Image (cartoon, rainbow, N blue to C red; front, side):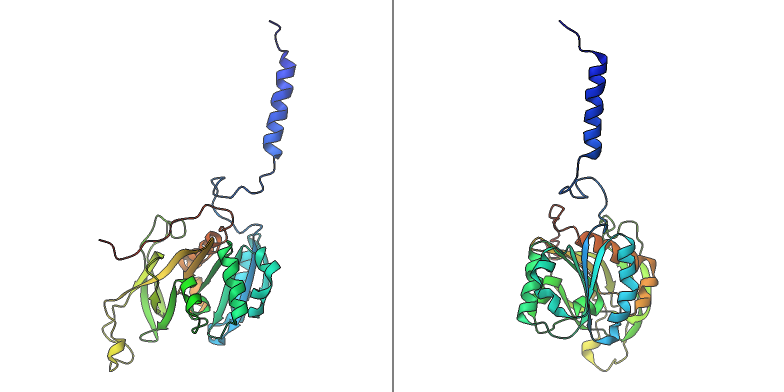
Length: 278
């Protein structure tokens, strides 16, 4: 039997190695490559407006530079009509919305919902996501919760991380917030709760109102869920933008953005963890 020359084997091996190095990886998700989610190269639209008390305009200056520093392609809009742009919405990986109160038209909502169903992520914080479009029940279902009120007004309260195995909260400890709103919300039970707060004050600013006595209640604060192929991330923290100076708050928010941006690329994650089980 004729032996194969060593130089032939070397040449074939070199060609194989070169192909493995330069072979394009388009269509392979970060998860499939065993890498953490990233915003690098992701298409993000940042939609802001509504009630100015939550500083939507100022939020652009806070968040957009961080997104771009991570390599994201960010387009900023101050009108909900962007949701009707089918071509733009189809190529968007993540929508970040900071829009408290207000109304969304039927066509705008249809465009938003279609994009999310097809894999576009949807994320935000506080009233910008959880207190928008109060007359649209289906929108509230997408988010997974809806603001009701904040007993006591601006109060100190603690945030407890209850799922430290999730990548969004991994390595984070419980922390405190000072003189800010503690959201009391209606909650979809089919969400994955990552952090909670407890209403443990004996009295609030208006103790004569019995409905404000919610001592003992436990309220989800940070969660994630699926809607169609899209991923939803929400945190009720953020009445004051200075709350993002708390390292845990900013870390969870950025990790949540990254996770939500992966709906088109990663396998669907099981997020239904109802509180009421036998």
